[in-house]
Length: 283
Ligand code: 7LP
Image (cartoon, rainbow, N blue to C red; front, side):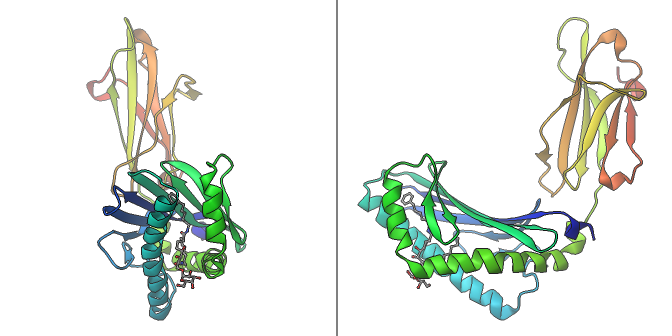
């Protein structure tokens, strides 16, 4: 199947805000490729599944075991940060971000990562069997690393989670979530004119919205000629697990006739969308 042929990135993303020595919160989410599978609000004791297939192929017993590990981890992490802050006289507010997970490639090959950022800057990572400072980390991070690496139990748990559990869990999710992960949603497309780029010029705007998955091709064309002046916007989330993209072209007002916006996407099965400028009263 398609989803097993490509590489998939599985990420745990955590944001911890320490406002002062008594106000803090930790929220997290888990993503499989473009889709959110889990969320973990500060108010909740457990990681919640946001997809019916998000327990993968793990048994209830394995799931409860992992929930316990995460619960202990979150409270220990909070306590660790407060102790380090006191020890190193770090100032509040503090923002910590954790990004960890694995990328599973076809043929059961997988890579993993676990990075920590402080005030938006990468400061340390878990590499192989131990914690390591990031290349440009401040000097106090060396002291943190020394303390963290003394905890052999935690280093073993982290290795087990990254090396064994992560790829196993992802392989299960690829089975149980197959139909969601392989869904194809066709885009809608429409044209508009943007703010005039200058006297005698038009800004043609082609909007493409509501598509899934993310890879998308859109170009302004004249016949078969791709217009090299096409400016692609960023792919933006619609918020309903579909995406939005626009492509603009700056043209002399007299040259707009005959231009078209061409859209290619996996959901269209080779039947490209072509929208002509000047149809339905535009231009
Ligand atoms: C699970 C182990 O993030 C992302 C998944 C990580 C899973 C780790 C764990 O919870 C904590 C408890 O350890 C104790 O019990 C264990 C069994 O439950 C073992 O027996 C272990 O030996 C024992 O010590 C442990 O407290 C751990 O330290 C929790 C946090 C782990 C962690 N560390 C990296 C992030 C911290 C970086 C701080 C840098 C910093 C500091 C201050 C300001 C800014 C930045 N283990």
